[in-house]
Length: 238
Image (cartoon, rainbow, N blue to C red; front, side, top):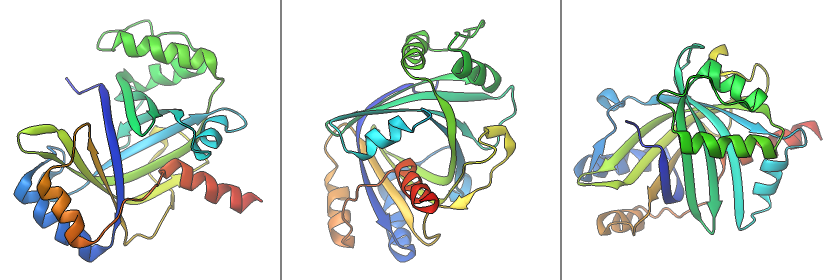
């Protein structure tokens, strides 16, 4: 069963092509490649971000409060209406990220978000997370605001599944046809030669990783895919 509850810190770094290739060499020494990354080829993650009519959730998040939250629907690749996807609540408090999600059929997910009524069939659904989602949907009136996808290579540390390191590239988004089943296309969000590395762990970074980051001379950055797209969108329409 896929993990459905995450509590961890997420540290982000931008890498150019040369640095990315250098880091990957070290990943293979210390980490295990995600099972979906066959022969080091990335897999696609596609998301729909939901927000209020006045974009309250992302506006609040961009003001850097102590607590922030968001709702998104995630698929791997382009799903069909009967494909299993993941409906997620992501919260952040004092830097600690809490993500809770449940597997759900895409058609049921759309219906649930629109109506707030729990699916008739709950087989395979995390009922506790479903309850939290119901509360969230009752509190906000939400609309699909953004399709955002990227290609990812991910690693887990050998013997320590708590540590996960991922590399995202080709981040793209669209605000038309905001549905997962409509296909994977969108406008590039940043330079295609840049990679976003995310280090996710609830514990301290291992020494080998600390030394690697110091050696390659990269520094943590504050970056939100949804937040960056929203700021670009606001500039475009102003």
